[in-house]
Length: 299
Image (cartoon, rainbow, N blue to C red; front, top):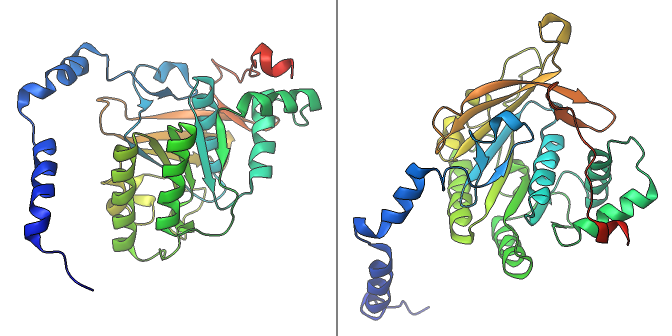
């Protein structure tokens, strides 16, 4: 293969440099927005009202959602997608661990607050979600090239802004003990999030050997600093081994372990799990049935 000379590439590299190197004055509006609060409070809210002005899921960023097996990471990720959809955002679920059928069945349950949603509600939900939610119909694993192509297609053709990847270890070529490859992959995802102007929620598992009895922190995630240093936010979901041992009686907790662009957002939140609807919630704000728009309800 004939190599392209640097002389031929020089004009293109110069144009790219000209676009990328800007004076401080070019960022005046961005900085004003930051201090006046306009930029900092954009993005999708967590399903907990008291966090609305403390933390958001913003486009151009990556959030790592970690936890021990069985803690409910995928369940909570579904809640986050529903929050985004309720705010009018378009979402793309790349779950290689659960088929679209089962993901959607769980969403019907979460939205309706019913163990067995009515047919009318389920059909209305699908009609409502038809312009808000897309799934990758694939199970097992996917290589990074194919994943990138699917994400770009979803953005270009469906206007997607929020993408769930469940999970890190379903991306082929990544071994659980190859932390260098995991780091490079997360760096690629961060670049993609900025390039496509999307928010990526990446589910990652805790290291082997951890149990529900242990309090999880960001060092509990496989790859630890190699991963958590390179994402914008780290959310950790844990379950209490014996809820009676805790004064609050909570079922679990969400730890906001890192929020790069939200000063003071880090905190632990005791959560309760409504098994009927499979929603995590706070006692002060129990789950509410999603009210779908009239067009969806009319079919």
